[in-house]
Image 1: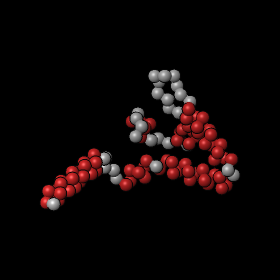
Image 2 (image 1 turned 135 degrees about the vertical axis):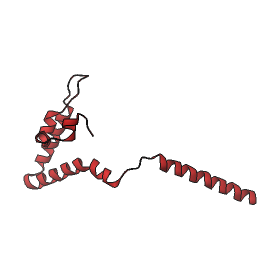
Image 3 (image 1 turned 30 degrees about the vertical axis):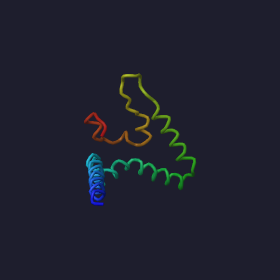
Image 4 (image 1 turned 45 degrees about the horizontal axis):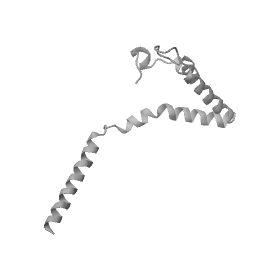
Length: 106
């Protein structure tokens, strides 16, 4: 019986070690990081919802179709694609962001 208790304690310790390793291997993120990642998607959903209420359901559908088409336009292989049409339809062509002067996407 004592041997069984020792085996149970050893397996519990090993299980706790495995859970601790799994917890420490995951990247630590701040709650604000999730908000920043989902910001653009949430803004677009809100904008499409408002457009649907004001102008009808056809307009958000049309804008989504145009966004899908414009996101598929690519340059030749080996050249970076900047998706100018997609930036224009989303209204990002009139703003200067970090990507514009640092040259990389964040």
